Length: 56
Image (cartoon, rainbow, N blue to C red; front, side, top):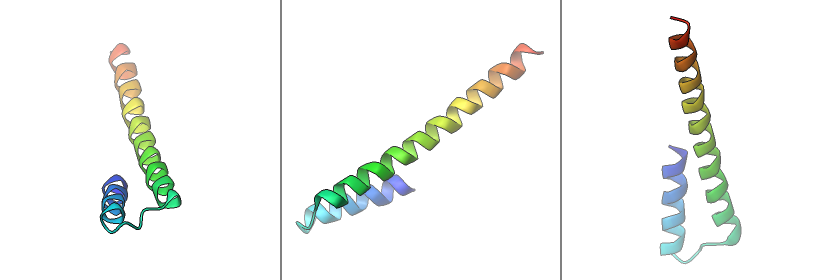
């Protein structure tokens, strides 16, 4: 959700030629934050699934 909003804001800013360094940095940071959270969730799911399978 955040990534779509950031990417959409980035496209609109480029389209209207109001893109600034701060806006680009904000879009990239929010995208990295979202990606990090998703990777954490997937990593935890893999870890918890593999742990429960080994104990059975």
